View (cartoon, rainbow, N blue to C red):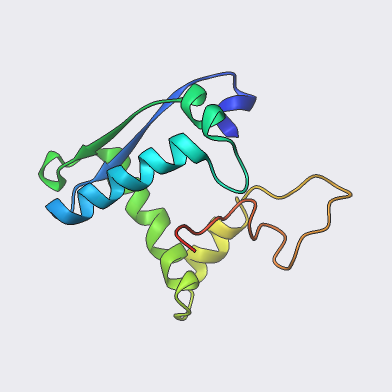
Length: 118
């Protein structure tokens, strides 16, 4: 959605884990590009994203390090662990629906934060 608003295309970069996990990630990515999600069509995903790139930790990419700083607090919250100030800062940045749309609490659930697979 951010790419669409900017009228841009982007790439997905994920950190390599294990051969099986990486294969599962590629399969999940292909499914999203094919079928989409409850929130976005597969065609729209294909149009706005150019590729999925799986990169090794040894490459020490700044973008992946930044992603770890964002994902770790979100992961703690999603699995029910105690959250810290870092999550509250990140939480304030989640996309929320426009006025007039009813959403469950918190307002970003299923909109600014979508947890896959369900």
